[in-house]
Length: 180
Image (cartoon, rainbow, N blue to C red; front, side, top):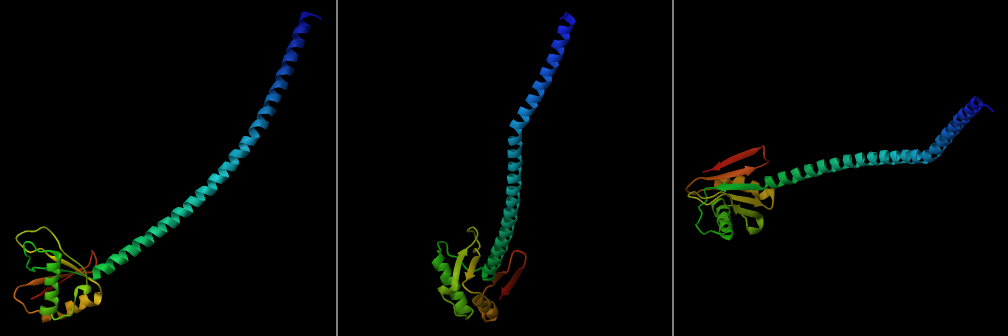
């Protein structure tokens, strides 16, 4: 064999070897990557399914939050309907809540001629800072009926001085009643 023939043989052998080696590498890579690609596709399906579930849960959570907000607003409005605020009722310097309750009950029972006891009052408290003027008194009744009876009998109120009854329905709708 001549040198040229040997070179050509080597070139063709190297070419075949490179081609065979390249195909073998391709087949090996395909066989190794195919399971990974399948696994990635499965994971993508799982992710899509979980995203769908998350969106459904977010929708349910949003709906529940809206329902809770509506219920909370409804409860707050119901509580507000039973509230009054009494202004200009004399305040002692060291007055406690028990004394304040006695004054309110006297105002309601004696001056306004409406039967009410401490069980009819759910909560009461002077609001604001102490100063030269008497602080208003926040009163929440146990039932709306008692509050309405008090407002209805405001004409029976016959004392010196002006008292202001403030009736809360909700934050945007406020009604004032002045009793003289």
